[in-house]
Image 1 (cartoon, rainbow, N blue to C red):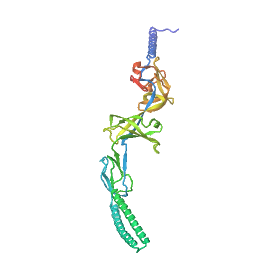
Image 2 (spheres, helix red, strand yellow):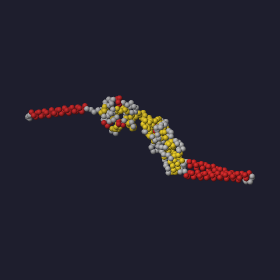
Image 3 (cartoon, rainbow, N blue to C red):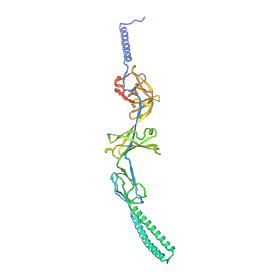
Length: 383
């Protein structure tokens, strides 16, 4: 039998007491860990009614409805250019001039030909009169008179031809001056002094004063939404407050060979604040073939290779993953074609922290509600 001393018994008793205290404390910590459940505040959006229309935005530049591409009507070397880009011109103003030396010489040659033809007419007229006198006296046969008359008629025709040739030569001289036909602004210069140009080659472009328009390029997927007469809005990058009502004036019947887009021209009302060359955005409404709901881009995430959103169960205060089908991305967020319906509440931010059945703190219904059709309203902030 082992005998225990009083000191030994006290040591054993103290160790057991400390062990019991440690176990008790450990049990308390476990209970605290079970009770301390994490509830994460979240920012949510409530899905409103699906969009039945969508907004189309295309950018273009302001231009004149009519542009005159002016060129010389004769060939020659440009010897003078009298206007610069941005200058206003009016009818009759000389814009450029080519060397007229050869055309002046042609006028002199035509004038000489006309003088010779006049002399020939005078000569044949005298011969015809003489033949007529001899025929009247029965001295010359009638054939001689007829020959004299034919020579006279031929001389008259030659003179008429010379008159036309002289007028044409004078016109050629006048064509060496390139003039404006209408009021406008010079927008482009394609040739300069010293360059030899052919007749009809565009040298200077003048934007005719009057109605202005915006030309945009529309892809084939949206061109059906633009019909002649359709009302649109025009906004300008230079002035956010400047918004004008426009109307589609012309729609191209074929796509551009390179860009595969269709040119659409939108007429603008007369407004002195709108200047040629300004950048404008044309806004139009289009009918949706399939209604979409919009969510913020931050609400969309990916799980197991699928695009999902975290749907909030208000009654349980938990979140659950739901797969969605994205239609497209827009300036105001993401358009979802399938997977969401009106009234659904989804997490709008902090999706990287979400897990299945995770407890979340959801804002009240008044904060999270969204009354705007086709949009989602956000409430509360992720912390």
